[in-house]
Image (tube, rainbow, N blue to C red; front, side, top):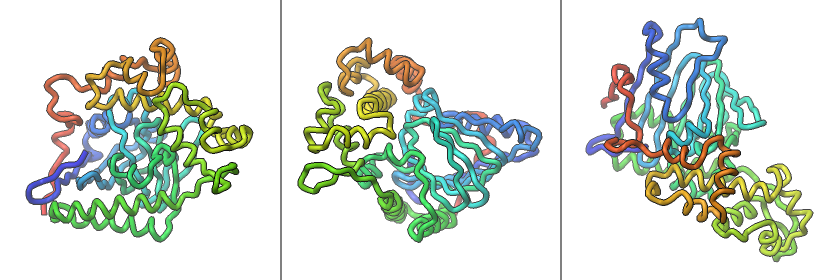
Length: 345
């Protein structure tokens, strides 16, 4: 997602004017690998307009977007097609937006920071768009926040740290192409550290155990699940043995997540999905990826996978792997070219 330039960082402005009848179609093509875009029914009579500025730093992309009403969705097909599992942070600089994930729906106000894991399903509705956003390499952020999946849909209020982070992003936008690559690395590291700090402020519920500390956090339980997903024998009893918890306490901890057994199965399926969309693993057999995620029977895995994502493992793999001869993992659609211009110092 990020690129280094010999002289300065790469940054682009993509402008879709309202007087151009093809603007909405071109914008849809721009977003197609990341989101399915639609103009909401209530705004179809309003001339469409969008302007996006993107600034590429190492492992980070800073963006500023202004647009008319938009509806964005990210489902299993979109996730497979994009082969992206970055984490994005969105902050409205004017107005609000609403997101939905399964049965959860929340309104995000101006100044709040909303975090989304692009390896999971998502729907966003905005009556108008004015935001700054940050796309962060999962690899970099996992070193600071080990269980990133739990940040999906997290909303952080405009604390002092959150405001400093947004201010730093706006400074990146203001500096633009004048930023040198050596400076960009330092700036990117600082942004990632601040994001990690914002996420670290979120408290995790704790539950009583008979261990040395007397309590164990839900984050610790989730981390234990992640470490042992490849073990087909891993289950609720494994957690009880490791943390010396009462069975009722363990089940109460996972009750909001659908139950401990269901949670472990969900994590295994998501791990398999992520591996199938990883281009670096495109030559690994699907059955091997299933076994690596703790499934012992390929047929049972395929049924569970299809029931969860609405696609077979083979269909996900075919969507995720680009055709032979594709030079870039995220090629820019030809219909977007007329709307792009580089931002120069």
